[in-house]
Image 1: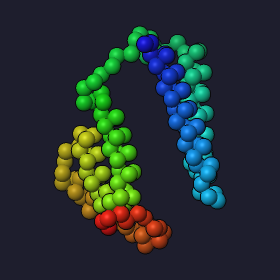
Image 2: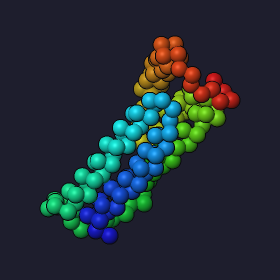
Image 3: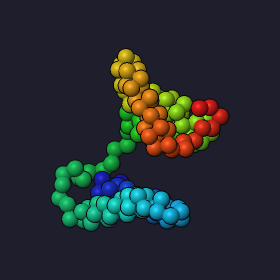
Image 4: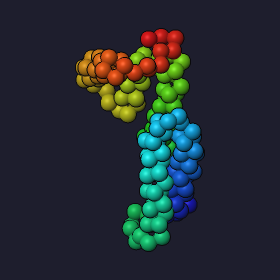
Length: 148
């Protein structure tokens, strides 16, 4: 498959997913769907621009065929996305803070960062700030699940 057609198919896929999420977010109560509607509309607009650009570009990056890379580095975004989907599920079943803590360390490790001292230092600052911001300042009712 040529790179130009890969660009067009990617844009069409983005439009399809954005339309699905757009339809779901319009059913949100009150004005809670305003931001999702806005972001999905922007995604659709940008994907349409991608498609239009693909017909007029003479960019060398679009020449040649797509080369599929099935190494860990090539598939890493798919793995991170799968972990993010599992994180979304686990937030409601395990709990926001516990799941966020595990997600932070797992995704940081998956993306290649290995300095555990820095990761721990960031966690020591990040998670208490998240608690103060969401639970105390905003009084948000975050999912608790079976754990905290």
